[in-house]
Amino acid sequence: MAIAGPQETITAREAGLVSCDNCGTLAPLGSRAVCTRCHATLHSRRPNSAQRVWAWLIAGIICYIPANLYPMLLTNTFGRVSEGTIVGGAIELFEYGAWFVAVVVIVASVVIPVAKFVVIAMLMLGVRYGSRLSAHRRMQLYEITEFIGRWSMIDVFVVAILTALVQLGFIASINPGPAAVAFALSVVFTMLAAQSFDPRLIWDTLEEPQARARR
Image (cartoon, rainbow, N blue to C red; front, side, top):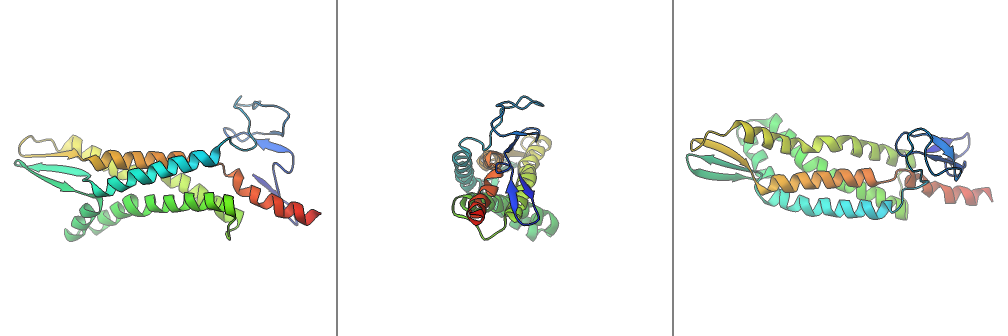
């Protein structure tokens, strides 16, 4: 959190304030350890936030690799089992003329997860080494990443629906493949990485240059 002044940006910590992670209530820094509204523990910065973000992010990337290599769906038709990966299924949809569905699958299963990996890593590197992007722009990227996280499960939802509906015994049946579990874990780990990130760290990069400028 930062307070915009006419000439410079002052962070809440520089102003002697700390905000509650749960409800956003402001309190004087160091005056109390518990929020007066929701009784959550107050931290100027979340302890070990960077370590948790990197741990969840790496776990998400590791799970995303088998999610694309192994089959997402196992289709059994008259005893013949066919396997379909995420990208392979999207290509088949293109061939069948289902362009819109194919684009949705590619965006939800490939573009969004990869973009989340890149953005979270970029935010962490920006906190550590600085960034050419302004703090406001990085906050916008963080908020977008956190918002779209819930939509990354669309593939898992589709697999669950198909598995529940298409169970016709020997004639036809659809079952989730190993990639479904890996993809679900990857999405969950990435969401945890985004939630573990403390956006207040973005504003820390402004404190030292402004402190030097006041001297």
